[in-house]
Amino acid sequence: MIDDKKNNSRTLINLIGIPLLLGIIYLGEIYFTTLIFISIFISTMEFNEMCKKKNINIQLMWIYLFYTLIFITHFISFEIIRVENIELLCILLIVICLSEVFRFKPKPLENIGSSIFIIIWVGLFLNYIVLIRLIPDHGMILTLVMFLSVWLCDTAAFFFGSKFGVKKILPTISPKKTWVGTVSGFISVLIFNFILLKSNIFMHLNYNFTISDVFIFGLIFGVIGQIGDFVESMIKRQFNIKDSGTLLRGHGGFLDRMDSLILVAPCYYLYLQFVMGLNG
Image 1: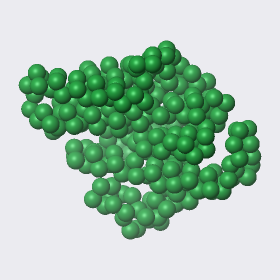
Image 2: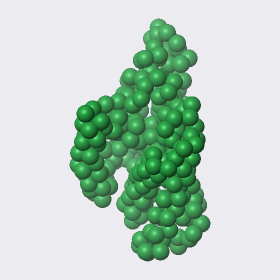
Image 3: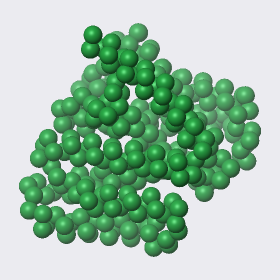
Image 4: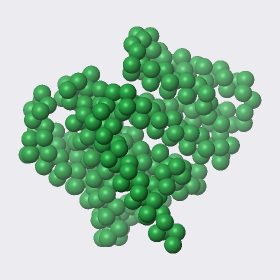
């Protein structure tokens, strides 16, 4: 009975959430940026709740202030406040260290380390999703390819892994994931992006896509994406929890849904910018 309710909730969220997300990807601009930053804020909140279980107190106020500044810079240009500026991150690090001295909380080193980790892992890495969508002329298609590829990888890995998988890949971190599922996810992404290449989906972009690009996309979406999933599983196992949250009934928390994209987005953006020359 419980599993049936969970599956029904999962199906309902898929029916509503997927078309809504696809529509927002198409609209882009403030709609898409706002959605991603809502996910960043909530994912950080979920991480904070996990930390509390180990008596770790991250500096949520400074973290949220930093996120807000980055969100604003997507619409208002402030040369001094840019996420690319290492000076801004240095200032934030100094503020977090100074604040920790006067907080009188236990585990100060863990508090500082966890605060910095979540800023980079969730805040900065997921912000690259917005930067990808903001790529002139190409952002919508490139973002759509990323989301569809990650979804396909997760779906194929789950289906083939649960049906045919036997040998576990990292049983101490994620006991249910198998080699069959992992390889199936990677192959499905390769096939999907090869189909996109041959069907001329990429022809609208001002770039001559090749088989090499398809293979790199496969590595980013099908390998690095799954590693991102393992990273989150590793963190949850340390905190001894199954799901990062309960807001997405049947799907766990926002962090559970974004885990693959956390590592995919910066790798994808760096490849688009420095290898393919597609940037904002």
